[in-house]
Image (cartoon, rainbow, N blue to C red; front, side):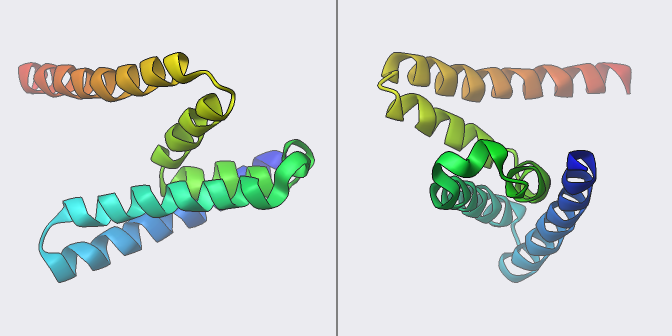
Length: 122
């Protein structure tokens, strides 16, 4: 049943992301503002979900539906942000810094490498 929750939630989150990004881009003329809005609101919503669920989160069917599904389809940045927050809450600041640094710099490097590979192959 969890697979169904994740699948349906992902479809809804992906559609919401597409709609909101298009709306913000149409109003501002730049896609970056829609993406920024999605990343920040998705991070807030995932934090809100886990904050509301508390200790019940690991057993709640809302996590696969709303957390992994809707918010996973809406933005994976929310998961990145929440995982960094969890490390900080566990007093693992060094690990959090490494996680954030490698995620951001590694992500940029991977995007650049993928872009170069695509240009070379295209």
